[in-house]
Length: 175
Image (cartoon, rainbow, N blue to C red; front, side):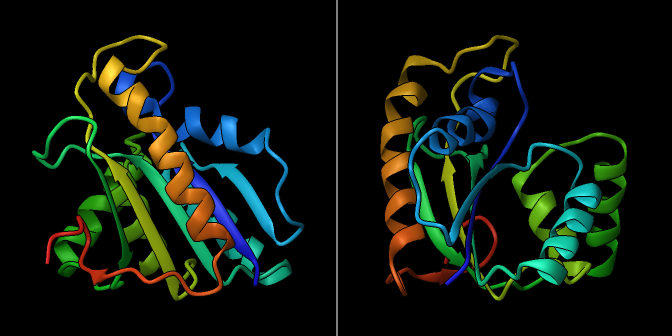
């Protein structure tokens, strides 16, 4: 099974940098040949085009996407779920496309735009960490830095399992 493990987020934006920081760490590890690790911390429209190209040349069966998302949970908490793939209404989709082309980088935006453009595999697993600090800076807050190893372990486990037992939930992971 081909698996793409990918981080989403900004660089130098403290906890919102979880995706790129962890993608760099995970890319330095040894993975089986059928697992790729990438940083998808750039505009969702461009990511969707890159994923479409990947699907045309080397199809991915599972996408494990991780990053920081502020959802009002306890800082440093980790949420993991299989995304149900349900898209919001067309106006919300268009708003996400508009955000993406203006440079906004978000896990939700990537999922919505990627699904709308048909660039995602059916099996999409999301691993989110709740940020504490979104100010400028190269390092995560201490609470999120501590959570990074948990996120990494969850991502490793999901990437390497044939069919991980996860709840299928809407975007955001709330039932």
